Image (cartoon, rainbow, N blue to C red; front, side, top):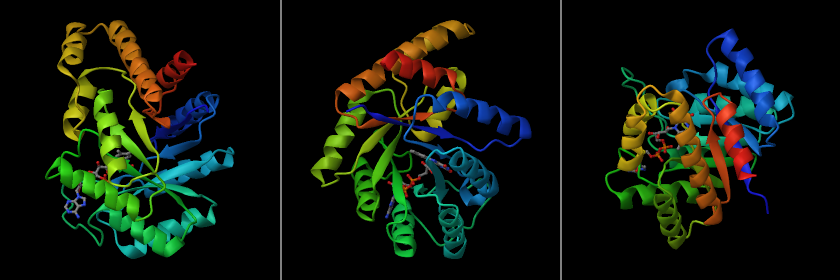
Length: 274
Ligand code: FAD
């Protein structure tokens, strides 16, 4: 069976960004993804923009999965958002805790993602197919790997249909995580999140913040290229394609691409994967 792919966007802030995303989407649509997902700013900062991109995707005839984070939110506001998506015929969502924006002290009525999953199920039954986040290299705030794995299992048992992982460049971390989750009775698909490599400096900073490891040998090699963007791109493409091949060969059920609203790298990787 051909593995499914899904592709993630963030909601642009400017009219030019929205226009550019339309052409990016038209390109990526050629890959026939299972769904396009759209991120959501914790605390509701992108509520309107996320909804607007999601509606466009649905109007183009694609399955759209709005991300929804609960930290800093009330039950009433989440209920309202779910109602809006339901009325728009959206059947899928990515349920997250999110991170409190800096300066925002109010944590709201939800503490962790499993509470959001429970709430969505209680409010809307089986209407939504729910994705949750998974962390093969462990969430940066987790007290221990065991705690993080238990938290993941809780989210799935609360009613998630599938999981998407944080990106990683070490396939063994993914296989280990899947084995551990399966041993605890998790039987939903755990889809690896894939971050194509556009440049190295930003990626390194972002990876430090979200707890994704860039192995030393890769880091050293990227650093050695300096400003040579062509070499970085070529090495990044080889690396990520090989990672995807290994993951699919090892049984990954599909791939979720963090597109960063760009089509070229995701398209090239999928082309190489055949
Ligand atoms: P949770 O599953 O709630 O876990 C958060 C932390 O709390 C973990 O360390 C966990 O171990 C711990 N924990 C869980 N339950 C308990 C408990 N009962 N007691 C103690 N500790 C506990 N962020 C956005 O803002 N918008 C997005 O659109 C977005 N999309 C994402 C998509 C994917 C696929 C991924 C992987 C991440 C995404 N993120 C997004 C980032 C995410 O919001 C952050 O990683 C956030 O810090 C954790 O969210 P979560 O849903 O994984 O939280």
